[in-house]
Length: 294
Image 1 (cartoon, rainbow, N blue to C red):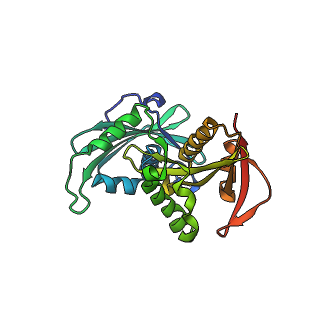
Image 2: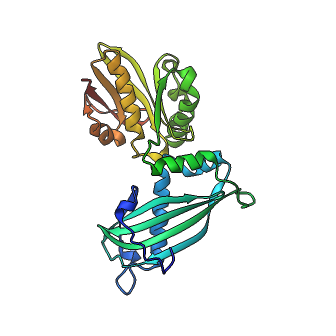
Image 3: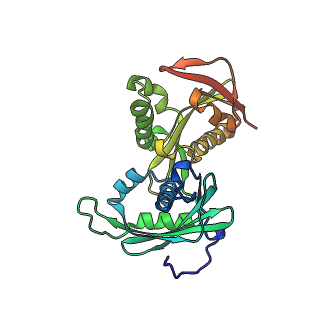
């Protein structure tokens, strides 16, 4: 965006927004947001844009064989944000060239356009920082996201089919992140139960869970895990939904799960209710929760 560009920027130009509130530390002596902070706002929105595409940035770039480097950043100041304003930062991929990707941003206070931004990135080899063609998979993912297409698929199947991806994510979440002993993570159930994995458009596993056989009509969901950087993105809910559908299809009347207490509110939002008393498993506080299948 050049300073002579008078094109009206509207909220309707964007389908993705990142919301934030102006903090005291971001306001200058003029009692408005200091100009340099707007770049931080847009950069924060870009980071969330990748999460909205179900892409864990570092791992995604590694799998694509490159990384993105800022080539140019242009800010178009129209009006100022002030202390405590709630602002929405719209972001979209405007154009993909051979090795460059252009993002356009718009910062709004309700419907009022305050600041615009154009960010030019170059896809390059991290070792040499020389440009490379934008990979087809990244090009297709960006295009699909802007078109409003789903960024995630969920597949159910057996361990032989899904075990490699599911086990890698469970190892990262339970063994490495939560320090659960590996001998407690793996059991004989994996070989015989139904598994579900959520994948992004690069084929990376971003969520997983499993469904044990029913006892007296009550089945049990377990080993629920979502990639650390992509939580709160709906991926865990999609895995639970797939497992519930499988339980319902085989005639189960209720689904139970042992929720870590930190995830209790997540499952409550999905319709699960506490059943019984809290207990400890692998040194972590849990509570059983259940949901009737209709």
